[in-house]
Length: 357
Ligand code: NCD
Ligand code: ZN
Image (cartoon, rainbow, N blue to C red; front, side, top):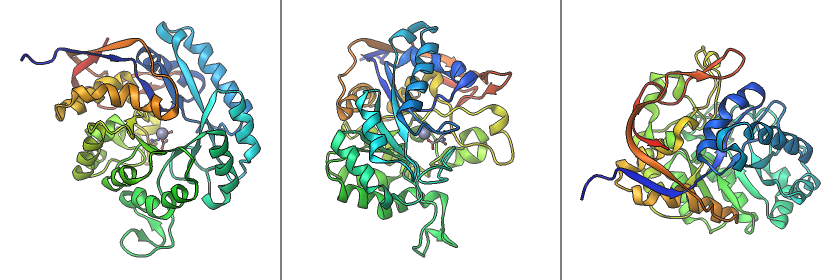
């Protein structure tokens, strides 16, 4: 049998995407609309998208811009609310009613980019989680704990080390949420560790996880090589990457694609304490194909990219298709990011062997 030259699959959805606003939004939107039918849009803008009115306004601005781009007319942004200490069950009910907002995002305060207004004590959100379960709104979680009262190897003066933040969150927070809200649908976003893979495998069917392309392709070493590989949760060591590849290529529908493509201006990355986030949207499907090919698992790509996420969210699967072709090309060193800024993609300047039509 000859080597596979192209792969035609159901058109995928991106279950975790940062689009920003203004000229940055205008600069990056087309990359996603070209390949994906829908994307779950993260709410960590400045100020964050905390209620229905803001979600609606953001949705409208994305739709207005999308209409000006090639396939954009067909693109559907799926909106999320940003949970804060002040979120009320009424905020949830109101956002759910109109149908555009399908999930709410839990950022532990200060865990990542624009999360200063995130949640300081998840136990205070009990009424909010209850309402979410009742109206069937999905809870998306940035699963990292920064500060912990537990002592031992995971902490230093109460602060949890970068490499242990996800594992501590599973033990100290996620276990509690899953136990207390058995009918709440939960997505543990951008998982990075074998602990997270095991947790999700063992959890009941209402718990799933997204996996990024960059966590399938790179390890912690890459963070020391370039500012552009810095992201939250950070890339981990090789055994964790292998566990993520196991999960993504397993065919288990609890694991599906969310790119966490997170653009930041080159000038904001290439500085002493640069922003966290990898921009993978230029050709996220080609990056995922590259990772799956490492495991000779391209036959499992469609389920992971196009089926399992829609099924979990209770939305219909897309009906048209897209083709990813074996083709040598180079990821550009930079692309325009609006207002005279530049954006450096993940794996800038690298040769890829797959390209999406
Ligand atoms: C994201 C961003 O830049 O908004 N950054 C990141 O490193 N992934 C936020 C997030 O998803 O944590
Ligand atoms: Zn993200």
